[in-house]
Amino acid sequence: MEKKLFSLNRNITGNLKAHDPALVKENNKWWLFHTGKGFGIKSSQDGLNWKKEAPILEEPLAWWSDYVPHFDRDNDIWAPDLEFFNDKWWLYYSVSEFGTNNSVIGLLSADSIEEGNWKDEGLVITSSDGKKFNTIDPCIFIDAEDNPWLVFGSWFDGIKLAEIDQKTMKLKGEIHSLASRRVGDRAAGVEAPTLTYKDGYYYLFTSIDHCCRGKKSDYKIVYGRSKYIEGPYLDKNGIDLLNGGGTVLTASDEKYVGHGGQDIYNNQLLIHHAYSRKNGEYRFFIKDLKWENNWPELKETDNYFKGYYKIINSARNKIVSVEDSKTESRAKMVARNDNDFDSQKWMIYPVDSTFYRIENKNSLLYLEVQDALKTEAAVVQQWSNSSHPCQEWEITAVNNDEFKIINRNSQKALTLNEDNNLIQREDKDKKEQKWQLEWLQKKD
Image (cartoon, rainbow, N blue to C red):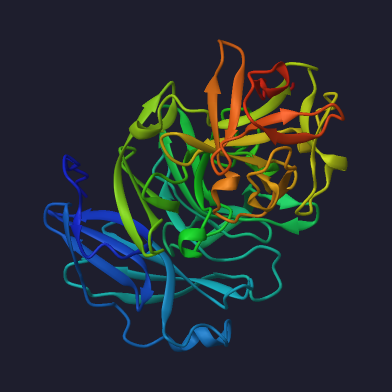
């Protein structure tokens, strides 16, 4: 099928309400499949103005209840993805009992999206039979040798990959593990995998942290790359995505938070959903994707801190750490000698054109000022996502090597006190208020 791109020189319009969008083109018409009752579908003649189409399935398929008897009876089908291969469209989708890994991935086929002659091809894989992983969020991918693969998974045991049999379009062979995030023994947010290939590398994109919480969503899109489709996939820091790695592509902006549920079209377009900061309503976006030194980038997030860093105090050369490597909320921030613990490593990424969030690699909690206080000497701690400005920080260069880190809510500076605890104070340009950001390098 032809894959001709359209110009994004103006905003997309029309019916833009969609979770987990997947973009394709058939002949001269664009189609967007997404989570929804009986499959959410939209179409566009120019790729810019979108209208809602009728769902494929008016009623749930009877065999679903054999695997997920308590699935959404409103016929809500999750995260579809499709590809034209061997003269047919192959549409993979998931049905699940929310919050569990009682899930199935199913398959439909059609000669034409426009004609809508979809055929039920049945079960692809289920995790309702006791598997550790979760069979949702499928993405079909055709590799550099024209072999089809399916990547899928969510939370639980992370992201998985399996080759597809070209005759049946069902899975065959070994199931590979590609990405995982955990806090101790507890699974953490990683889902919505997308694979693409460019210039000798396979790229794995996932959405991490929390979707579907309106304006309190902290979903974000991260990526890693590998020379081999089975991995390992390493981010820009050299961290394996199986070890919680992932470089942030986009997380939020001035108007929308919770960027995620992504698709990549022809290595030139990023499609994702997000939530309005104002009212929490969601919609999809189509953005130009570019590549620098074999890494993906978005134009609006160039020249920002994005990755894992150690935060080092200039006065005492000590590393910002979570006290005793705790993973609980309210654990205090302290400065310690460098032990190379994950509790001393911080994912820094922009949330708009000025401010950043700072997330601990060990706990997956955010650096914040306790109880959103604006008072002098208030304690700095970690906490789960609250979407409050007390969890957002401005990073301002003092010179080539040092920065001030200013809280958005209080306008006070991150400061190391005499007891090596982190607090906030009025910015006095003291050495205790200056920080070095050391890019985390993979150790051989």
